[in-house]
Image 1 (cartoon, one colour):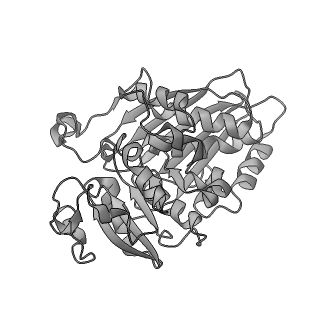
Image 2 (tube, helix red, strand yellow):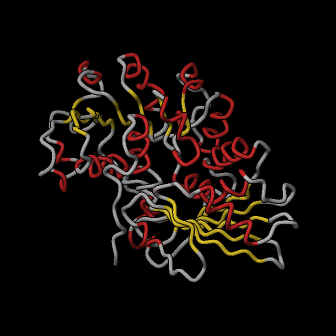
Image 3 (tube, rainbow, N blue to C red):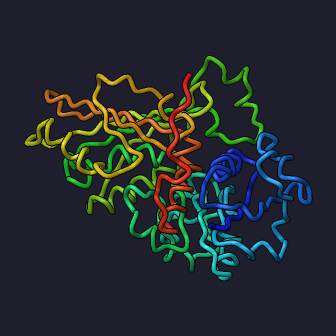
Length: 352
């Protein structure tokens, strides 16, 4: 059994992770670390899981946190992992971090991300960055399998990267034309902490765009696409919040080179994802909705190619709290320990 510890159980990310680990056949959760409710039962933070875990919340300062474990998940905001991960790595544990602390392999890239969030630009553990691996298995599986430290991707990044990976890998796009990512997310993407902008009266029956001056996930999307395609890739990204609980629907527009036909585009996507367990390529006649991916690790990609305008339209559907966060982190764990990637994750969507 893989012995797991979780840092940060109070948010949606930590709670969702514990939900998944409770039904994982190869995992035992040995400890939960949280700055609040220390010494109290885990059920205080996640009442719906009190029948599944008999654990007491440990303090982040407890010297036993690094003991009796094989892997630790940091389901924490930016800044926590970069301060705490090293002691777990030094104790021989593998580390999977939810935040942007370890999505970048050098300080310069991390600075752009931090600036977009208004965070301190100085990384507290820059010496760890050269060994971190970007944790999206569909494009980085071999590196993840060898990694000790993995940075779980941002939710919007997962949605857009899976939509665009075959396009840049097979060099289908017109390099000089902009790639447009129009992305809509459910309210849970804002996290669990109360905020007046996300109270029911403020959010019901309304939607809005935000961070138009620059969203932090743009940095990782452009970096990973440029690496995958071996050429610079820039995107125009518009995030929006819509009145639903969970899910991301990203509509991506990309201009395709004149000599490439629709059949070649479809072949590229089917070839790229042929052996992937959690990505499905769909045609416009299939009635895909965000309900198909609710509470599971799947991504559904609907393709429509307009030969007259040369525009490829890709609609990417994921659950922001699952493939965009917790279940992708578990998929990374499965890869890092040489397990079947579907263990604990092969779950259907929840409908209605």
